[in-house]
Length: 139
Image (cartoon, rainbow, N blue to C red; front, side, top):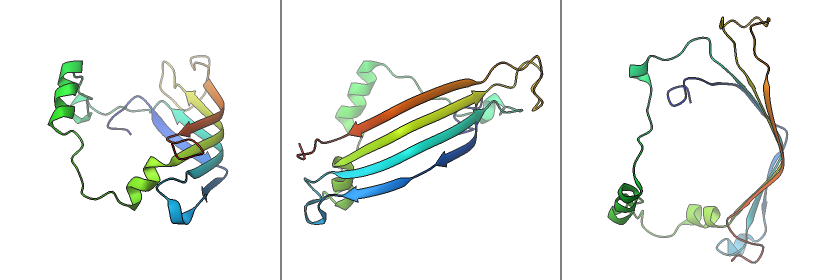
């Protein structure tokens, strides 16, 4: 994370409950697999030091035409037969009860000590997040 985004540092992540519900072991191709996550708390801080520009990874921006060309050339190479991992990814549902993210910038003097120069913490709270690659009928 530090090489891609040198301006933030992941200080801690806490997941209160992570469970997997497989609705039908015999029919993984059609039956959804539900990943149930209760509470996720992440604390992100501004690092005290940054990586030098020469050490950072910079995402390359491409145009729509370049993206279409990459896809047509085979951006995702075929890996062979449709396997167990492909079945799981194609039929996954992720449900998250809550996601709490806090970002603490260090301020003008870049110290861990809080003072008048320290900007307020940015808090983001999301509740009842659901991602489904298929519906309950496997469609």
